[in-house]
Image (cartoon, rainbow, N blue to C red; front, top):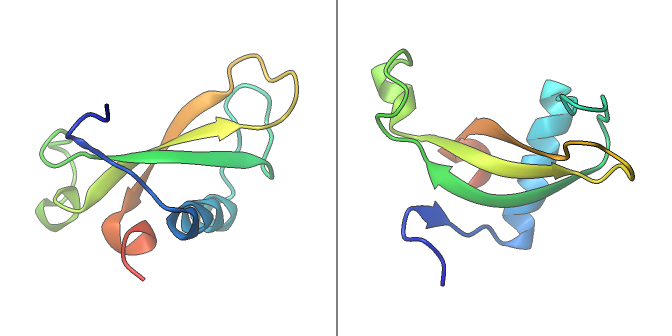
Length: 89
């Protein structure tokens, strides 16, 4: 059973996550991989990050991502995105 605070992403939204990762040139903090990512689900951050602008923290989401490079010692991480980057077409 999924947790209520988690927003499941469909395949199109996961592809948008991969585009955000490429655009930002995000690298795996463990192995440095920049190309092979698997996107997970989204967690709405809301007021958790008080240092962000008021308009931004209402639409901030943490997306779970997994490095797909074989042998990566710590493959799981996350990326913060805005709602419009991933959840809205």
